[in-house]
Amino acid sequence: MNFKSNEIDNWYQSLAGRFNSKLIISHIKKLFNTSSDKNIVYFGPNEIIKKLLENNNNFNTFYVSLSKYGDLSAEIEKLPFQESSIDNVVLIHSLDINENPHAAFREIDRIVKDDGQIVIAGFNKISPLMIYSILPLRSIFKNKDYVGINRLHDWMSLFSYEVQQIININKIPPINNEKIFRYFGFLNNSFFSKINYFGISYIFFAKKKTYKFILSKNWHKRDNIILGKFSKPVIHNNYER
Image 1 (cartoon, one colour):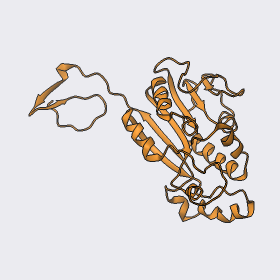
Image 2 (cartoon, helix red, strand yellow; image 1 turned 120 degrees about the horizontal axis):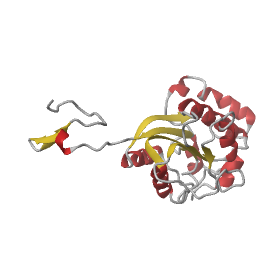
Image 3 (cartoon, one colour; image 1 turned 180 degrees about the vertical axis):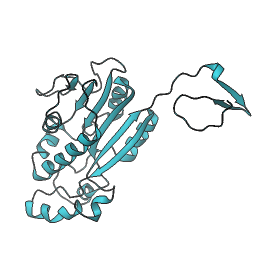
Image 4 (cartoon, helix red, strand yellow; image 1 turned 30 degrees about the vertical axis):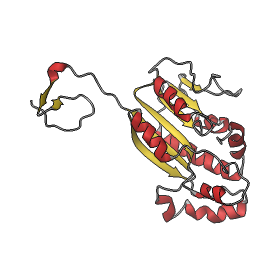
């Protein structure tokens, strides 16, 4: 079962959700280039996107949502953008709520420019969220389909994205009792915070690779291996000058 957008919105109103939201916002603001010459598209819960867009002076920024808060109302599998027209894309839980996340990712790949950047935030099952799969506790995290880190990493490789950073954030179990929640605060403020695993949320930061056309005169074969002056990426220097 996939997450529902309304249950994610409601969870972000809770104590644990508000805390998770602050961490996602602070990390994405550090990662992301929002200069005015970039075309940027955001997807995700309104409360998070609204805070990400605070003091944003980029007039080429679009918040895509089926809710009344979006700049554009569109489904993520059918976006009203031309191919290779968007510099940066931010997806927050958009793959978590999609019934066909791979198709959604393909559509995102269609609109992202060469060398464009993509940020994806989602829930990480290999974390304290796993307790909801084991114990009889009521939660939005129980019996859900997760787009895991390894699965997403495979998609990045398949679509020729270079993963530049994976951040695991928030190791505190999503408990709404304030006293217990604060008791577990040491998991984010000590040795445990330096371990980049087991956060209940992850953030992927990746760049779309560009493979430029190579003229036939710039390459040749030797011992059945094609060698040449490859523009990008540079893998080795064993070509003839």
